[in-house]
Image 1 (spheres, rainbow, N blue to C red):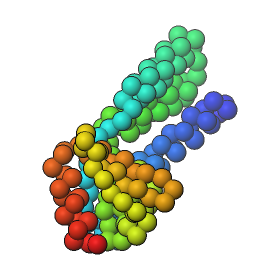
Image 2 (image 1 turned 180 degrees about the horizontal axis):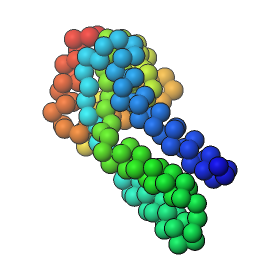
Image 3 (image 1 turned 180 degrees about the vertical axis):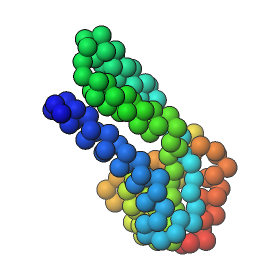
Image 4 (image 1 turned 90 degrees about the vertical axis):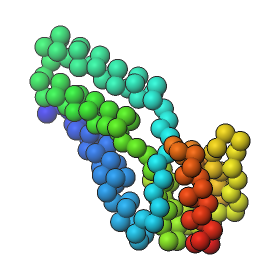
Length: 152
């Protein structure tokens, strides 16, 4: 196994680990998920460029009579990237004491202010940063509001 194959395996394992963490483990951490709201996807152009570059690498590896293992690993990386960027739906998960947004935990008592922008983005002001929550369905903002009022 070459260094290239080792790096590809590490990338595949890291992306699959992230997918499992985001889809399975986050639902069970810090208690039961009380509200899960789907979010808008971002960066489709970036993912298209990444998958396109992987397709070019696969083509070059095949035409240069490269190792079959490398071609398979590049294909696997492309499949994982397609799943993560196009099929997986990002979700904000509200728990009893906090929320998971973009894989990070935020407790409700760390939220200094909440505002709704004109274009339907929920802005949560924290001490060090802002969370910009772009919901897929605008009606979900009302669900979030009712949940926050009932828990706080």
